[in-house]
Image (cartoon, rainbow, N blue to C red; front, side):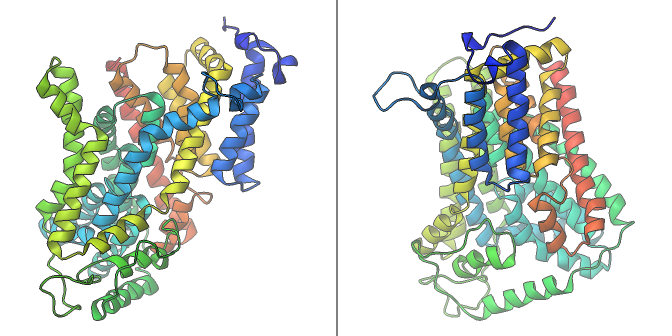
Length: 527
């Protein structure tokens, strides 16, 4: 028999018409429907849509204006809007900012090309698709999905041209690696936001994300090999020629690095003309030599490739430090040594160390000026504002659901139906993803709904991390025409829309289902 909630004795809003659990569930359903309507039909910016829906749900569930926004006089009570925004961003804003700057330094230093070249040489021509996949996984850890496509696409063009085979055979493994890391692993915004909302240590998210993500990406690589042999898509001549022309132009002339105060278009714009603005102006060496570069009389001289060990050190340092801190908190009793390990393994400290390593190993030691480092770092933060606002609004939505009693009503209903939270989390994320296209919106909305359901449970950190993996897996299901990533993949690699649905859309679905299947299986044995 389902539990009935009186919504803390409230009778205002919609509860005046439909009281108790039925009213709260109606508020939740109408709120999600309104969110989808505002994003899909009205085309309202997701931050504004989430904020508006949070207020509407709060008022519909009988919350007062004071509870939502507070009063002009000082009060000990923190309003839900402030608690949701501050509680979420207080944890993740620093992580996303540091991770973004780290990825930008790796991008413009030529680290991606160096990594791909080493892996291609290691695996050989016959295993070039596997090399592309491994490149996507390694480079995707610190770099956003769209940045990875822009930087690595010319390597895919070259491999496909040399072999004469379908570009899908090389592009899809790369895309699978980039997509898996972007969805499943910190410091990317989705898993970090979900970790903040569910109060899970990032070390556990890394462990469970890798445990589910590696089998998922292997399954996706299997599908990529199958579809790549059956659907032939030639290398897009215009994109390949543009990439080569850009390389020749950058090698032939040196531009002064962009000053930190110079205005520029947002890095959110996906395309060579958008991301190349940073690469052409701020990249050092063979891509662009900053002023004051030591030992370089010829600005067009190619810079020495980045060593593979250097790249792995920069990428692996924060992951290793965070994992060590997580293990120490479980394996060792409180002590000075454990405190030291946990200090260096805190995500803020670990990512700061990794960023400083990148500044030195990939920048200053290779001839970058301090002005170039500042310009690259500042430019990389421009698209982060939108991400942080959307994630913060998701935190507000979660706080309102919890404060209004809607989340408890949902939890009671699904507990009565016998549906595990991890299954509910994946299904909600899938529905939201397919309906409105944004993986970030799907993650923060779903996490906001399921977080209060888990707040009173005795689930371990590992189990909660598996719920986050399920949410992340659901958020990448069936990328189609309402997702910007769909068009980015289609246009960058010259894949017709029909073939993009056959290849990319199915690839994302394979990643999603496989990742959820592993997370669900692990959740049975990890309470």
